[in-house]
Length: 287
Image 1 (tube, rainbow, N blue to C red):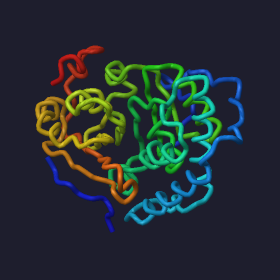
Image 2 (cartoon, rainbow, N blue to C red):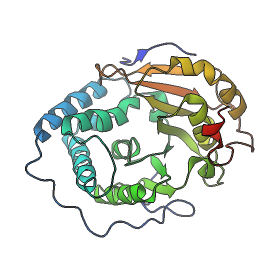
Image 3 (spheres, rainbow, N blue to C red):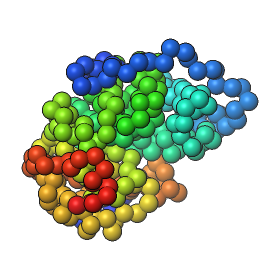
Image 4 (cartoon, rainbow, N blue to C red):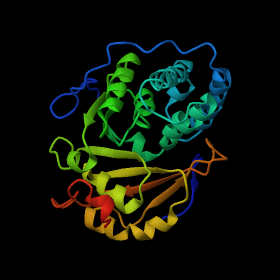
């Protein structure tokens, strides 16, 4: 049973990685223990459990969603983020229930879709504090994940968190998307590219589609309706080798009050060597 609301169309690797991937130092000092005065952890765990139960009811979803150890891994990730957040700006979301919804459950919104279930490798472009990449890597230990970001301090935390959680299938890359998308180690190497998108579709398509192999897909998480951007992105999809249609999936089963949506674009042809354009140009002059 597919619990997504269809809205229409328009292997294991080291945390440090090798070659282009990784070589960021893990912070040597573990952050202070999560303070006993932080309220809401019980409510956050209850909210997380309800969301994971909803995800587990989706057809094709991994059985690991029902494992209490997986939920505890996610709670530990929340603790690590909020502890480190006192020293490094990782997130503005610090209330535990909101964190469970807007970081943990939101990251898992693609669970059950064929794009994630069949992928062997995925890149999280602009991962920030590790979302959606770290929760997905914890759920799918047999898939390889590359998390990229332009800020080194964020990736130092991601490296630390992946090591702390025992996620041996995570690598990191400190680079802007325009640079990484041209690198031979990244270009058209991934079955799936994920991006919790703040930019408009024509911009983030140029960032992400160069990472995707032909036959793979890009999945964009949007917190506000972006149907108008589908038409705007037609030229970008044509130029970059993307599909003519954009599949839209609303995940009301997990976050019924949020209105968050996934936009999926298939990769049908190789991306021309002229894309992505040099740093800064995709945002300044969208396709």
